[in-house]
Amino acid sequence: MAQRLSDVDDKVGFLIGGAQKSGTSALHKYLEMHPEIGVGDTKELGFFSNEQFYGTGESIYDRYEGRYKYDPNFKIYGESTPIYLYWKSSCKRIRNYNKNMKLIFILRNPSDRAFSQWNMEFDKSLDPEYNGFALETLPFDKAIKHESYRAKYALPYQHRVYSYIDRGYYSKQIERYQQYFPDDQLMFIKYEEFNTNQGKVLRDVFNFLGVDPNFSYPERVIENKRKKHASITPKDKRYLIDLFRDDIEKVESLLGWDCSDWLF
Image (cartoon, rainbow, N blue to C red; front, top):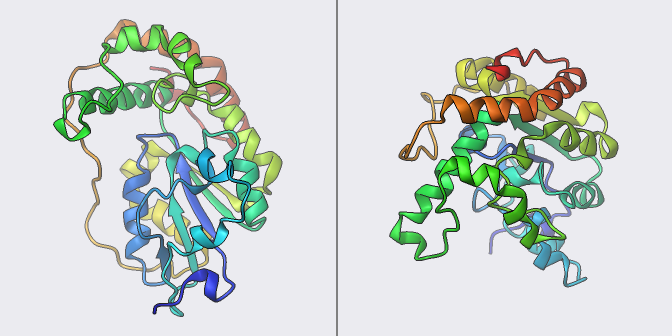
């Protein structure tokens, strides 16, 4: 039988999270190719955001670590679940599991991200594979206008689908992690830079994780590309920018970024 992390007293050492529809799948794919990095048996394990698991009150870390195959050549193990950034209870759970966890988060223009998430959810409603489990049937303008009303049915938790706007308020999500982890364990990536300069960003990520930064990866990875069912209208774009403007300024202050490109 293959050894698991729980058999060798090792821990998962990094997590990828971030704004949904921001390139986490592509980054995960690159890290999965690295010979010194071990990943779980599926991309989104969702362990630290799983309320059902944590509601049992039992020790479940061995269940989580059992999703990884031990290899003495791996220097670090990790996984990618975008919602870890947004899901409020994830942060403390991650800290309780491994106070030395390294966290990588990708942030995307919140207006573009909101539309991309809606497009993904709307696309599911047209896909027979989801067999009636897809939740989004409204056009984008109505979906964002009615978000707060629709989301209340998930209380006391956040809504995993009707959160197009709420997921884009990044500053409070950043601050939550800064309360639990030191800055040298947090890495924030701007999606637009990752999209245009993947080579530099990947080297920075490899250095952050303590693995060979000169790993020669294959050609550009494109993951989870879906059919586009509409285009965001100028009116909806202006509406979202006005909502996000103050929060974007806070993100710039927290991370030292220039996010002026998110304002048009």
